[in-house]
Amino acid sequence: MTSLDRAGRLLVVGAVNVDLVVATDRLPGPGETVVGPTVTRHGGGKGANAAVAAARAGAGVRYCGAVGSDDMGASALAELRDSGVDVTDVDVLDGVATGMALIVVDPHGENQIAVGAGANAVLGTDEVRAAVDRAAGWAGCVLVSTEIPADAVAAAVTTAAARGIRCVVNPAPVLPSTVDLMASAPVLTPNSSELRDLYGLVSEGVAAPEISAAEQATAVASRTGAPVLVTLGADGVLIADPASEVISLPAGQVAWVVDTTGAGDTFNGVFAAALAAGSMVVEAARRGVAAASLSVAAVGARAGMPSDDEIRRAM
Ligand code: ADP
Image 1 (spheres, rainbow, N blue to C red):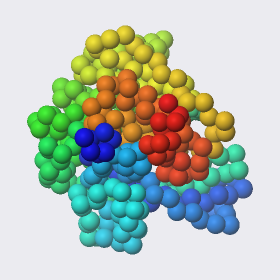
Image 2 (cartoon, rainbow, N blue to C red):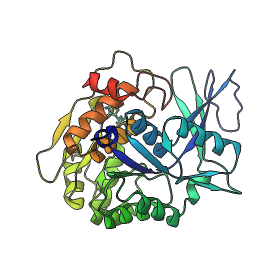
Image 3 (spheres, protein in one colour):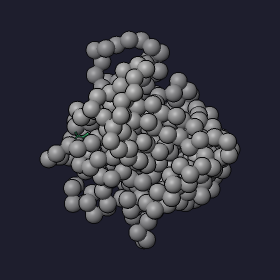
Image 4 (cartoon, rainbow, N blue to C red):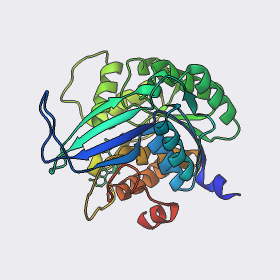
């Protein structure tokens, strides 16, 4: 068995952004300009972040997405390559900007974010289908995050199903069309607000505020026939599997929470890679939780993502 057989081979389909962060004394009001002393740049986008998390945890990772043929796109790809992610399946598009998040943060950690989706909004279905086809026989799992066109999400999920590759969908955001993909039995990994949106889709908008997260997740899982894993921040992860009782996994103990940005992406990348390596859902989720809880100890989505050794020590 090679080390990649143990750590998993994963295709990630989703968005890549460049995050530009300005720290200011206060957030601007409408029409107002505030000035901060510096601007920092971080790699971002839920798909690309998850790809980096999986690679750092030792998995073999291919990433499929789109960037513009600009300097930002070139550096976003260089960062992914440096993290060990294969970017052969990335479409480099002329005449469109690389996705960018403009983030202002105040001293209390409150923020304002505007995202220009750019190339992410025009990722093509043909490119996605080709990437999943190319991954058949190599990848043990396809992870799809949904900050890309609905038809690109559908292409990834249905092609993975046709090829018999396990598929995890991180529904962030929940697209109305997600309900059409449930017949392909994707494993879904919403956070608590996304779970409410998914529940709204499967219950056709019947408002039921008293229904617990466990009951909502169970209702969604009975629709897909596949596990639903709900990330609950400091409360860990809840697993609703049609084949068993609801299970709750506590988060790892964190002495000092520095920045939770990207915690969900870390969970998704490491969880999907563990599934790709053949782990059972609960075992894969334990690994994802351990990695995500380690990731909140550093600033930025990617800086705190742990190595395989660090994850093992934390479990
Ligand atoms: P998202 O970023 O998608 O909203 P969550 O905030 O639910 O995701 O976080 C995902 C995972 O990260 C959690 O299930 C948990 O394992 C870990 N995590 C997040 N916040 C904390 C925290 N404050 N302490 C420990 N672990 C955390």
